[in-house]
Picture 1 (cartoon, rainbow over the protein chains, first blue to last red):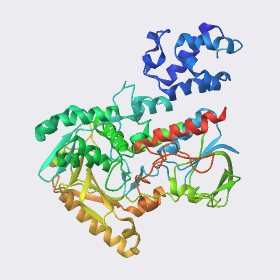
Picture 2 (tube, chains in turn orange, green):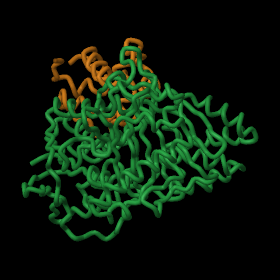
Picture 3 (cartoon, rainbow over the protein chains, first blue to last red):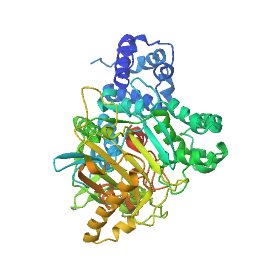
Length: 86
Length: 463
C-alpha cells in the first residue's frame, strides 16, 4: 500500500469507529484525540482493526505513533508496503 | 476449545461477546435461563409485553455527543445512535414530605428548583457540580470515601442531601446506608448531568440488537446452559461443566454471575477471601391501566419518593419497605410522533424488600403475601401521585426470589456486592468478572462493563 492508500484505509477504520463524524474535515497534523475525542479504547480498536484486516502487528509501546493521521501513515508505511487494499 | 467463554447473556455478557466475536475470537455465551437479559429482561403475559429491570436508560446523551459512556458504547459496538431508539424523559421528581424537586435531562432545571426551594444552598450546589465534574473515575483513590460525609461538608441543609441521595442510591447503590463517593459521582453524572431515556419498544429492543449483532459476527449463544462448575487446574480455569454435564474448554472465562457467585463455581477450593454479597433487593409491582397516566394528571417519568425527612437505604425488616420507592411510567417519555403512544397505561412501582423473609414463605403464603404487598405498595405510592388504582386492568409483580432466579445473584441483590472489583480480576489468572460486580450499573453501565473487561483481559492478550 502506498501512503495515500494507507490514509484511505485509516479513514475507513475511523468511519467504522465513529460513523457520526465528518472525516472529510480531518486535519492530518492534529491529534485524533483532539479532533474526534478518541479515547484509549478507540486507539485499541485502530490497532485491532489493522490486525484483523491486514495482519499488521503493532506492539503496545508503539501505540503513541498513532496520535495523528500524519504520524500514523509515516509509522505504517514500511509495515504495510506489502499489504493490498481490499 | 473456545478463546473465551462468557457466563450470562445479560447486557454485559452480550456486549463482551460482540467485542470478542468482532475480533474473530471463537466465543460462546452461556445462559442458564431460557431467555436472554438477566437483570434486564422482558416477557409476554396474557397478551401483553412486560419489561423487567429497566425503568429508564441512564447516561443518555443526545446524538453527536462525543463524550460519556453512551458515546463510548456506540463506538465500541459499531452501533449508530439511532439503533437504540432512545426517547428522552419528560421529567422526573424527587418527592419528600411536603417538598419535591423536579428535574429533567437539562441540569438547569434542577439548578432552578434548588434556587427556588433551597436558596441558601445554590452556591453549595455549584461546588458539588464542580466536584462531580472533577472526579476522575479512572483514579479510584477516593472512591470508597463516604458520600454522606462529603455531602455534609458541601451542604448545610441535610434535607437537600437526603433528596439528592435518594434517586442516586435507588438507581445504583449496592452498599447499605451510605454511598461511596465515587459511585455517587458516577450516578450523579449518569442521572442528572447526562439523563434518562427509553426506547419506545423497551429493553427488548436493546437486547435484540445485541444478540443480532453477536450472532452476525459468528458468536454462539447457548440458552438453558447453566454453568455448574468452573474447572480449575494448576491455578488456571481450563473450562466449565454445564448443568447437564457437558464440558467446554476455554482459554479465558468472563463471568457476569457476580463475584461471590463466580468464585463459588470454581472447583479448586482455593477461595481465601469470602467476598460479601449485597443485601439490597426489591419487589416491583406492574399495573396496566385503561387510561394513559397523563389522563390522570400524572406526567412524571419517574418519581423517587420517601416519606421521612431522612432517606434510609437498607434492607428492611418487613417483607417490603413502604417508606420509599420508585414510580415509573413508561408512557411518560418524549416518543417521536411516528411511535405514538404506548397502547396502554403502565405504572411500575419498585420498593425495597427483604430476601430472607420472602424465601421463608411456603408456596401458599408467597402467593398471598404478593397480593397483600401489591396493595400496600400501591397505597404507599399514591401518596405521591394521582390515585390510579380504579383504572387497573391487569397486574404482575416480582419479588426478590424472582430476581434471584433470573440473575443468580445471592440475596436477589440487584446491584450486586457492595465491594466492586474494578479491574475485573479474580484469584485465577484467566477468569475475569464483568457486569454488576465489576462496578458499572445501569443499562449503559453494564454494557460498558462487558466492553471494558473484554478489551482489557481477553483482547489484548490474544496478540
